[in-house]
Amino acid sequence: MLSHLIKLNRSYRRFDATHRIKREELIELLELARLSPSAMNRQPIRYRLVSEPEECDFVFSNSRWGSYLKDWSGPTPQQRPTAFFLLCLPLDAGTSQFIDMGIAAQTILLAATQMGLGGCMLASVQKEEVHRHFRLPADLQLVLAIAIGKPAEKVVLETMKNPEAIEYWRDENDVHHVPKRPLEDLILP
Image (cartoon, rainbow, N blue to C red):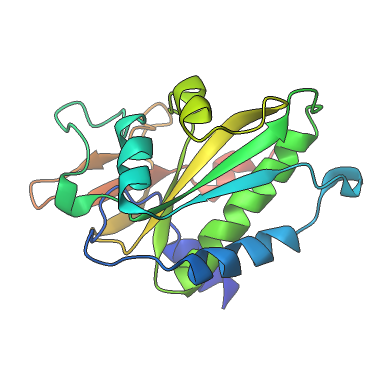
């Protein structure tokens, strides 16, 4: 059921690094993103699939993880994702194309959740360095990376008590807590 997938689909930051993601699984996720809606049906996003260990290490070393977790330096080598999607747009893409980016990313993450996997969207990537390393086409800009792996952490949603307290956090048992605004705060009068 979709509501169940949405509740399970979290920004996971710790994975089981022994669980390798097959290229065929990435293709299956990409196929669903390909079939998703696109503004004016332009379908501008191009994807670089990353699943080789050395390539994953490079993307990982050029990204930042969990900025709200001040005392955490990121996943250990045993907790790193084992695949990434690099999502690129044409340099002249209009702002509506960023809507496509969100639709594609959410589609990939929901489908990954259905497969027993999880992911995390990463905008904090050294984009020029990654672009250069993978020799991505010069007419494309790297906009987003999506880490994919087998989740190795518990994530709990909770209702915000303070509208300013948006930061996620970890408790003494290393459970990851994500505050969400109450539904009534989202509906305009």
